[in-house]
Amino acid sequence: MRIQFDETNLLAEMVGDAHGVRRSDLAASSSAALAALKSFQKRVEDGNYGFPHLPFQKPLIESVRRYAAGVSGSYDTVCLVGIGGSALGAWALDCGLRGPHPVQPAFSTRNPRLAILDNVDPSFMQAALESMNPRKTLVVVIAKSGATAETVATFMILQEWLGRSLGKKAGARIAAVTSQGKGDLAALAAREQYATFHLPDNVGGRFSVLSAVGLLPAALIGIDIRKLCKGAAAMTHLCWRPGLEENIALRAAQAHYALLTARNKPIQVAFPYSNRLWGTAFWFRQLWAESLGKAKNRKGEIVHVGQTPVAALGATDQHSQVQLYIEGPNDKVFTFWAVENFGATGRLPKTKWDLPAFDYLRGQSLAKLIDAERRATAAAMVEVSRPNCTFTLQRVDAEHLGAFLQMMEFETAFMGELMGIDAFDQEGVELGKKFTFGLMGREGYQSYRDQFAAYEKAAKALG
Image (tube, rainbow, N blue to C red; front, side, top):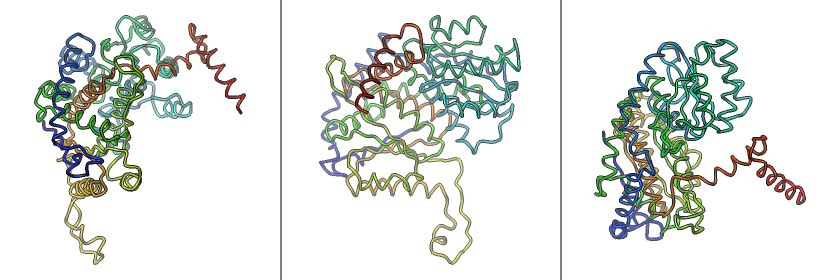
C-alpha cells in the first residue's frame, strides 16, 4: 500500500510569497504540528474520539461478514436509508471499488446494486420504489441518533412497502445500524428483531465509514472489508508517527493550515483525476465542512472559522470550472488526487487519420492522457500563482481506499487541533434539525416552532 503527498506547488518558491508558504516557515511550524498530534492522541486515549480504533475492531468486522454471508444470494438490491455520514461513506466505497454508476455490471443476486435513499424528495422516492422488487431487496437503515427525520420518514415508507409484499417476513429483510440501547430506531429494531449493528458513541457520522455504517453495506455488495480495514490500520500506524515525512496526514494538515491562516485561502478544491474517487470527493466535502466550520474555538471565543470544500472531477471539470480557478479570485488551494495504476490503460488505436487533432494521439493511452491533463493543470496553476498539492494512490483497491479515507479523517482531526476548534461537534447542523422537528409537530419542540413563526412574521413584514 502506497499513498504519497507532494506539497511542492504550495511553496512560495513555486507560486510566490503572496500565495505560497516557504519551506522554512513549514519547518518552523513543525513543533505546532507535533503539538497537534499529541493533543489529538491524548483526546483519543481519553476516549473522546474513536475513529482511529475502527480498523482494529475484528469482532465487528467478522460479525458483519457472517451476516453478509448468511443473507448472500437472497437479494439483488441493497437499499440504504440514511443521510450525510450515514450514506456518503457507503457511496464512496461503492463508487471506488465497484465503479461509478452507470458503468457497473448489471445487478443481480450475485452482483447486487447499492441504492442509496438520502433525500426526501417524493418523486425520487417514488422512482426508487418502482425500480426495486421488495422480494429481492434488503433494507439497511442507518441513524446514530435513531431520530433523523429524513431517515425515519423514508424508512417508514420502505417498511410498509416491504410489509405489503412480505407480511411478517418483512423484518428479516431489514438491518439497522444505530446507537446501542438508546434512540427510537434502536427500540424499534429490538421490538421487531431486526439484525442490528451498533455505532460507538465516540464516533460521529462523518467519521463512521469504517464502522458498521460503511462496512455493512460494503460487505453486502461484495466488498472485501477485511482488506479495507487492513489498509486503514496500516495508515493509522503511520498517522501516529511524529515524523512529518512519514505522517502525510499531519504534513498535509500543516500545509493546509498555513495556506488558510497565513495566505487567506478559505476554499479547498478536492480534485480527483479518477472517476472511482468521485464519490470520495463528496464524502470528503462533508468531512471537511462539518468538522472545520465552527463559530467558536475551544476557549469559547467567537471565531467563525472554516475552509469551504469544493469537489471537482478531472479531467471533466477542466472544461467547466478551471477558467474560474485560473483567472478568478486567488482564494483557493487545490488538492489533486492522482492514481498511478488505473488497472486499464485505454490504449488508443494506431490508425493514421491524416488529421492533426487525431494523429498525435494514435498509439498512446487514456491513462497517459489523464495523467498529462492533471500535471498540465497543476503547472498552469503554478504559472498564475495558484497553490496546489497532490495525493497519489498507487491504485484504487480496498487497501488503498481504506487507507486514504482514514488518512483524510486524521488530517481533518489534526487540522482541527491546529485551528483550536472541536472538529467533532456540529451545532450549526442541529439548529436546522430542531426547526424541522418543530415544523413537523414533534413533541418537545414547540419553542422552535414558535421561533420559526416569529422568523416568518418578520420576513413577511419586510416583503
